[in-house]
Image 1 (cartoon, rainbow, N blue to C red):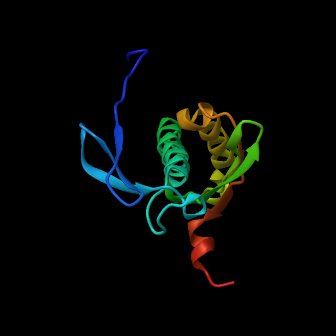
Image 2: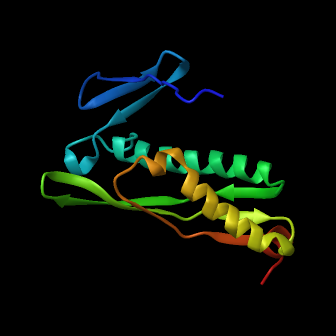
Amino acid sequence: MSQSYSYQASARWTAHQRGIAESQSIARTINFAAPPEFGGEPGLWTPEHLLLAAVATCFVSTLGAVAAASKLEFEAVEVPIDGSIEKLEGGFKFTCIHLRPVLTIHRQEDRERAARLLEKAARLCLISRSLNCSVVLEPKIQVAALAASPH
């Protein structure tokens, strides 16, 4: 396996505070704008949303790889995420991102191992490791049979 990889993308303004992000290696583009708080158009992806989506998708991909290597089969994973931005000296910056994965496992006896793998995925996630803010893991593990039964 190589020790170095390179990825390319580009972004450009189109009109009315809107833009398009694209990559030559991906057929689909992403329409984006600045957040409404900064004069952008509501209802479009923003750089802030894209950063959070990058963290969440990297975490899901990393968890999938870690679980496969550990032979832990799970039923589902969903990763709600939110980030706090604060104005600091020098400008705005993400200060904290909360990853709140909900992992649905098949068997109660896998709960402890699943917790360890969630923590490992958080440590190994390339995007999280590349950020200059804290990334807080707040996992929830549920067992499929128990999650489906009425309380």
